[in-house]
Image (cartoon, rainbow, N blue to C red; front, side, top):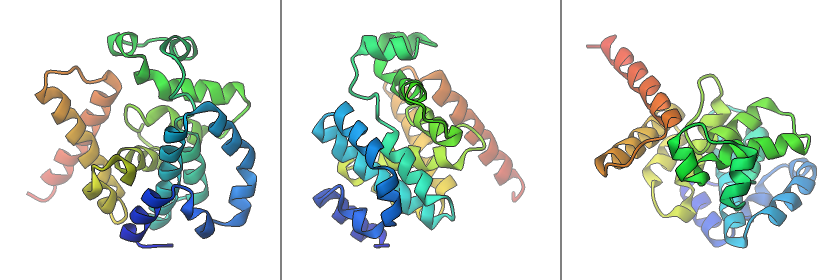
Length: 215
């Protein structure tokens, strides 16, 4: 597997360049899903999807997690992203005012619902798809991988520090990503999604608790 720096450069030049480094069986198994994703999203979005999938594979592998499933979750995570607001809310009815006002906030939940209708059944992958917009639930490392990969893939041009950290400390990378997002939104007077606030509070408590053991 290329180094983090090599991987970032490779994915910016060609989002599908990591194919040569992946097990051939993985690409064969996912060929049908890959074609479905291509049909569902715009070309620019597909480039993002492939970068997230490849980065997810690399982060999972570096952290001793299931890299194959991480790639799958990355490939599927934005399946509903380019649907209309009305279609998103039909698949995933609003849970809060943020959802009602900004339908894109539900595209993770909508993606999970759509994949379920298509017969996809891997619960942890579905949870990772659902959680990538608002933050990962407790007990699913795959959700952490996809969330971090989504916010830090090199095509975004931001969060390179989070991406680099994820290869050595996934939990620290997630904490940095969530804390930065909440601080950014709150600093501009923008309401934070309740699910993201819940993740933020869980991380804040666990971090404070961990620090209290040493000081």
